[in-house]
Each structure stands twice: as structure tokens, then as C-alpha cells.
Image (tube, rainbow, N blue to C red; front, side, top):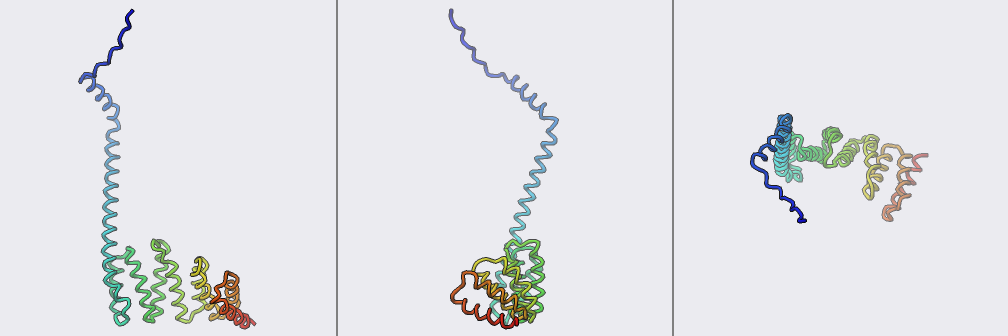
Length: 228
């Protein structure tokens, strides 16, 4: 008996295809409005983000260009007043940008360099407060150390030590050694010889730098004598 050959399914007629498309549309139709709304919202969000990114980049580029114009004058003490005014304008016109934040740092440094220690102190304190919320460039340790130098220059060694201590404890490696040594000197100058002696001993207990070990021993001995 001959086997029946399987009949190939004929291609769908146009009317059948149209019917399937209509059924699919009927299934989606109740949700079509929400799909369109959702797609529109996504499009608006993407458009808004692109615009924001472009404007942010443009503002940062303009601020950076303004900073580059000011930067050469930082090494010219005779132009200090002119540069300070230029930095003030930069911060005012481009506030919120990374370049403006650097402008604030340069301004504070220039005030310190020109021995305007009280103004420099206020500038560093304002910058330190601003960095608590947003510190993308990790400027806080540098600003805090600089603020400590301001109080030291004003003769307030206890305050300078208080400010420097957290940074010295957080830092690692050779730089921590430098900061701890400076902190010990501040304690000595402030009359806190016990704290100074503890730091000199701590430095000696670490893998001592041969070039500095003898100096630390001398300072430890001197601090011990002052404690009596």
C-alpha cells in the first residue's frame, strides 16, 4: 500500500495574515496608550540627560579655560591682588565646577603666601566645609593640612595640631611619617610635651628612617625633659 505523502502547508493567504495582525493589534490595543506614554517618558529622560551632560561639560570647559588664564599669575607675587580678583570672578561666574573649586584652593593658597593668614584661614575653612558634601578631586586632606599651617602661622599651635591630627592618622606611608613628625613639633610648640614624646616614640618604633632616627631620638629626649 502506497504511503501518503505529507502535504506541505501552503503559504498563508493575505487575508489570513491580515486577520492574525488584527488579532495581535486587538491584544495590544488596551495597553497601547501606556506603551506610547512610557516610550515618550523614556525618550524625554534620555533627551534631558543628554542635554544636562552637554551643558555640564560646556560649563566645565569654560571654567577650565578661565582658570588656565589665571594660573600663570600664581607664581608672580607682584600680581597677587590682580590674581585674587580674577579668582574671585572665576568662582562667582563658574561656581559648582571642578575648576572653580580649584580656583578657591588657589585663592586660599595665595592669601597664605602673601601672609594674609586670617583671610587664608577663612578661605580654607569655607572650602573645607564645602568639601564635606562633595569632594570629587579628593582635596580634603590637602585643604585640612593647609588650614593647619594657617593656624600655625598665627601662633595657635594647639589648634593647628588639633586640625592636623585626623589627616596624619588617615594618611599612609612616607607622607604619614612627615605629617606625624610635624604634628609632634606642633605639640611641642603648644606645650603638650607628653603628646609630642608619644609621637616621637611612635616614629622610632616604626621602621625608622636612618637619616631621621637620630633627630627623633633628640626630640624624644628633649620632650621627656620638658615633661618633668
